[in-house]
Length: 197
Image 1 (cartoon, rainbow, N blue to C red):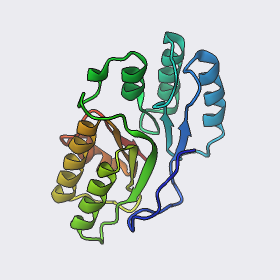
Image 2 (image 1 turned 60 degrees about the vertical axis):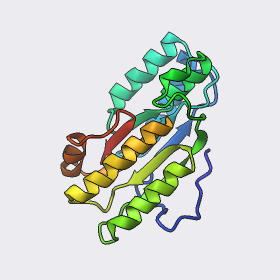
Image 3 (image 1 turned 90 degrees about the vertical axis):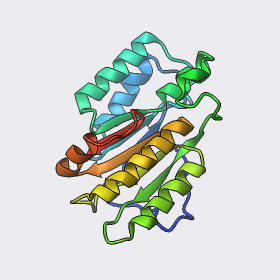
Image 4 (image 1 turned 180 degrees about the vertical axis):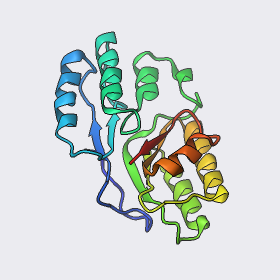
C-alpha cells in the first residue's frame, strides 16, 4: 500500500476515501481476475484507483481485461492510473510521457481535501506542493464541493496541466454529478480523471 504523507494541513481522510490498489505483479489475465475479486469486495459507491505504475510487465490479455473491468464497474468509479509510466519504462519509450525529460514519478499518492470555505489560495498552494513532491498520484477529495466556481475550475486546470507536464495523474474523487459536468467541460489534461460519487 502506498504511503500517504501526512505533513500537509489540507490532507485528510473521509468516509468515501478512495480504495487504492497498487499492482506490483505483471498485468496478466490471472492477475486481473484476482483484482476483479478485490473490486467486488469494495463497498458500493466507493471510488477505486488501480495504480499500475510499478507493474513489471503486461500483456494484451491483461490490459484488455483491465479495461473490461473498468467498463463493468464504470470509468467514473474505477480509475486506472500509471499506464503511461509503466509502458514508458517497460518499453523504454520515454516520449510516451507528457514531458520526456521528467524523471519517473515516485509510486504513491497524496490525498488533498478540497473545502469550499477555505481560500482558493490554500487549495492552489496544496496542489502546487503536491505536484512538487513528484508523487505518481495526486487525489483531491471533492466530497464537500457541491458548487464549483470559475476560479476553482481554473485552479484545477492549472494543476492538471502541471501534473501532466510532470508525467503523472491527478484524480478528482467523490465529485457530485453537477460538479463533474462542469469539470468534464473544462480544459483538463488527459491525465486528469474525474471520479463521480
